[in-house]
Image (tube, rainbow, N blue to C red; front, side, top):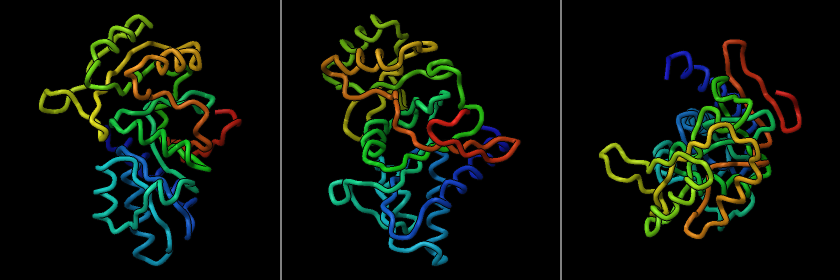
Length: 234
């Protein structure tokens, strides 16, 4: 990531935090963009600009980061309705459908997104695509027990499938103890149909197609920050 892209992401994330108000339950997303949001929230709490908020992290890594910054945390079981979630995305189409899961937290991210009144996605201009799958493979979380079976099934749907590995060369393991298959379908013409086909296979836990969940998109580019809501033209 270039220094310019990093700056754009930070600006967009900090803009998203302006929508966080005292007393809110806030979903804390994963990824590099969300880290900037965490740091801004922590700063505002320390300065007294925000108070009485509680965060629900979407991964153990985010939980550790939030705790280290002094952000109060709660659980989805204690607060099953979230006021606002700030998260990133790997790819976004003109209808605000998303591919997510590049960081490996797609299952919890989707649960939190579905529980959120407002799902605010922060990206730089380079994440926008005319169709999902143009730039990014779809991460699919599968049981370790039968990952090879799921790989064959996903290949039958037209995907080029890669078992995700950790930096040490061993399979990447999610917080729930599952594997991730990165599935390159190319530009996807029918998102709803593909989503149903994927999730219908036993052993597939969840997929990284987030359809109809994002309510807001914050885009950062050289031209500045743009805020698009669902139903508005990109």
